[in-house]
Each structure stands twice: as structure tokens, then as C-alpha cells.
Length: 433
Ligand code: GLC
Image 1 (tube, rainbow, N blue to C red):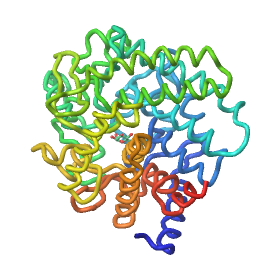
Image 2 (cartoon, rainbow, N blue to C red):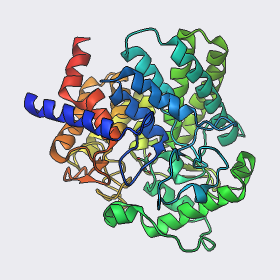
Image 3 (cartoon, rainbow, N blue to C red):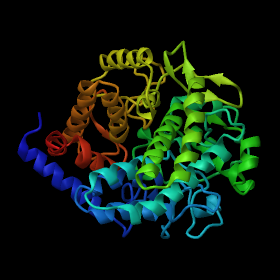
Image 4 (cartoon, helix red, strand yellow):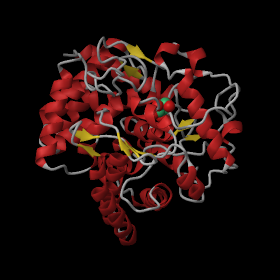
């Protein structure tokens, strides 16, 4: 149990981190390692900022959406200012945009965050929210057109970075089909800043760069990508987050009187809700990754598998299966929820997305658990997140085995999740509301 003094100290520290990472209208995930605006980091970070500065929280989303491409995509990185030595920087991506951006997207949590903010913050938000809903509708439509052109009801990623879960073991098999012979030499900067044992391996990076080169060579043309990209994978995290986002967009469009957006989002949502079942694995007893190029389902569970509960209503039988697997995982580790199955040989408790716990994924899964009638399990996730932050401060992620922090320090979304959700003071506020 975290005592009131520690709570007050960590509340103050979290706020201080968010203020220090503020570059004026947008917040960097952490200084040094990630010195620009990242898509889902910004959206999730806005929740934390909302706890002390409502106007600034809205700005975070506005700034992100202002970098939207003409085709509707909201990019995964926006390079608002020059930063010497960052790799891969604007020169590698060659997006042809001003400001320069990467050429891929990230999980579209933004609509969900806008809904949370609209409900959390007092006042009339229509003037601010209406333009955002138009932008979000265009982005979601881009997902349908560019990433699911055949209309099968699951959206694909063309790069592991699009999933936001960069080196998940799920990508190992599909990446093996990517030719890296033309990649050439490059200098990574991440491993100069962070212990290499905590980062993706060089072998993975060669594949990441081959896919960046592929996108750049076809000028990020979405039809060519859908037809020819050697990595084309549907995964439960991205698809669950998009389903949730469409659901929240429908609710917001109705609330703010934008019926045509509500109609379009409802149609897209129906297709996604129906298509999601293609990711179910009877062997793994959960939703897993589907390699669309090779028509192969990965029969392994990751934290993305539980995001199905956040994505939308799940039938009772499957929801129960999820909960009992989660309880089984709990017995193998000290802190939930690992990003990958702790019983699988590929599990690595400190290497990025191959095992570690991430605070914002815990928040999403807890949201889904609470909505499926498991507030106790949701509370346990908040307890674990708070205990990890108490033990290891606001690191990028944590080992589920030892609780040790990994990756970047003073990390924005970890601070935001503390302020908005895991801190005892945030939980007290929710209880008294
Ligand atoms: C890494 C993470 C990704 C995040 C980014 C910035 O690439 O895998 O999810 O958005 O860092 O924090």
C-alpha cells in the first residue's frame, strides 16, 4: 500500500515530468531517446496533462491531428524540430511533408482519449471537439481503405512500429520473409542511450530499415503497400484499439450532433467487430496475430490478446477464458501484465516488448476488465502499476519478474497513467465521483 506522503511525492514528480517534456503544444515521450511527437504517446499523455491543465491537454491532440496527411493518415512521428543524429530521421522516411513525419501510423487511441477528456473535463467542448471528430473520421476511414482494402474486417500493419509494440515475438516469423540484403550499414542511436539488452536486436533493426526503405521507394503509396509490402500482418492490439476508437467516435459524433460521422463510423465498426473473430486461435485460446501474406495464425498470446476486452463487448465464454489465462500468467510473474506469454521460450522480462509491463497497456486492459464485470482484476492491475512506479520510478516499462525499470527515464505516458489512473489520489477521485 502506498502511503499519503509517497503518493504526494509521486504526484508532484509525475506533473514535473510532463511539464519538463513539454515542447510547447506537444510532449516528447522522453528526452534523448524520443525527442519528437509520437502519435499514441501524445494521446495517452494528454490524459495525465488533463489532471492539471485542461487547455494544454486538448492542445496535445490538436497538435497531433494538425500533422494529418492529405490521405487521412495521422503519422507515428512528427519531427516538429530538427534534432541532430536521431535515427531513423526525416531523411530516412522522406515523407515529403512539412513538418517532416514518418511514413507509417500507430494505434489510433486518440478518439478514445478525446471521449475520456470530454467526459472528464468540465465545460462545453463542442467548438474544440468538432474539428477533431472530422479529422478522426478521416483517419479511421484511411485505416479501412488503406489497411483493409479487401474489406475482410481486420486492418493490417506494414511495419512492426505501426503496432506500437516494436519487437513482439509475433513479428519474428513474418519478418523472416523480408529481404534485408539491400539495407546497408547504419548507425543506431537508441543503443547509445539505453542498455542494448533492453532494446530490439540488430537483426530486428535490419528488417525495420528494409521496410522503411520499401515504403520510401514506393513514396508511401498505400495501394502499392497493400499489394506488395512483404510484411502485412493483422494483430489483435491494433485491431482492438481501432474497434474501441470507432465505438468512441460513434458516441462522440452523437453527443456532438454529427450524424454523418456517426453513420460512417457505425458501418466501419460493424465490419471490424465481425472481422475480429479471424484472429481467434483455438490452440492459444485467445486472439493472436494473423500473417496475411502467408495466411498463418500465430498461436501465441501477448498483451494485445487482452485488449480484445477493451475493444468491445466480448461473449461471456471467451471473457472467462481470458480471465483464467490471465490468472495463470499471474502465477508465473510478480507484476502484471507481461507483454508476452511468460511461459513461452521467447519471453524475455527486460527486452522491450518481449515480456515487460507497460503502464498504458495496463490501463487499457483494466478498462476492458472493469467493463466486463471484473473490477477486482482491474484494481489489481492498477495496484501492480502503482507498485512498479513506486519501486522503479517513471521508467518506460518494467520487468514483470523483478519490477526493475527499463528503457527511457522520466517517461511521459508512465507519468500520465500515474496521474490519471494508478495513483491512489486518482483512484480516490474516481470513487468519490
Ligand atoms: C517505441 C515504442 C512505441 C512508442 C515509442 C515512443 O517505439 O515501442 O510504442 O510509441 O517508442 O515512446
